[in-house]
Length: 116
Image (cartoon, helix red, strand yellow):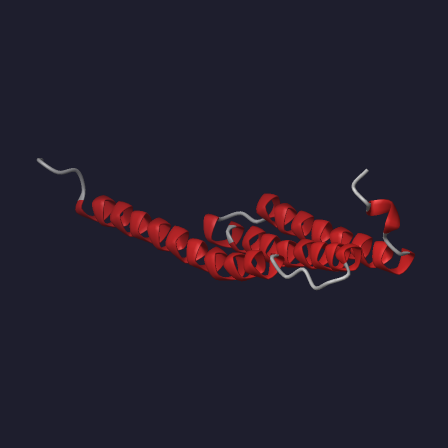
């Protein structure tokens, strides 16, 4: 056993609620990926969903292991911080690359085929 059976009921309920909230938010973001039509609309929903979902799951981990070990366990704050910082950066890079590609394709179509 890993000691989870020693978790008080209030901590187990709070942990379960936070994990469930993280799963629901991530699912809603994933459904947004399926529902929206263009690339630019599709990138926002999963990015927001996974960031907030990660925050909820990491908060659940903080609650669970802090109660089990009778001391603050804050390693997950690093996960939250890195997720909150890197996800918008990745979104910006993806959208910038897609915009560059779209601009280059529009420019090539406007000039017509080369070499004629």
